[in-house]
Length: 251
Ligand code: 13P
Image (tube, rainbow, N blue to C red):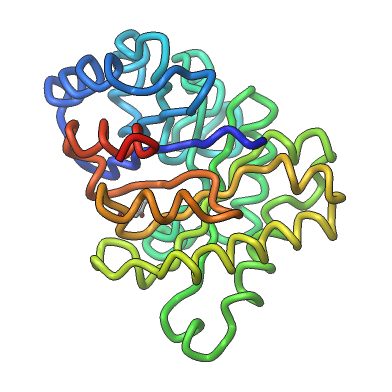
């Protein structure tokens, strides 16, 4: 049985006071960590203060990091700093990073290795663009992204990752993939992991869906065989909506 993981990706939103208030409130209403992993991924400058407020059942994640531990890399955030701040998760290779900051599959792979070296669980984002889906290239794209992201990892390491399938055309558009469509691609990603690392590893790996998830559609998405969690953007900014989604079993 894979433990569900519900994560909010705040992107570039919220100042410190709002963020602290949110985390304080939400941490009291999320399910026990033994049942569901609940995560908030915030801007780097907020992480340390949020970790102090996370409580017993909520965990804090970063939205990006660099792959080197230290050095002359002006403006980058080191995995060492994240680990030191008590951060547990880090989103790697979000489509916005790939699109606006030109992150490649190779960068993603280096970041995944660096995250695991520093005890951070990488939430690795994969997903196709609209024209790729329309040209039946979805599987080809997510297969390439998944294989290259995990290149060089041991089977044990691959058990410690989370994949987030986020079709780019569903992000921030209000246009969600149907639950069946999302499940089909998440199942395909699992079959790629099984081929590369064995069925046992693939059965343990958690695969999230992301793209216009909200309190009205989360239950159906989470009911799918291959969807073990959601990575939520816009709808994660409202604490009451986030509490509902973390408690999707009760909806
Ligand atoms: P939305 O939920 O706003 O579509 O964003 C999804 C996303 O990019 C999460 O990482």
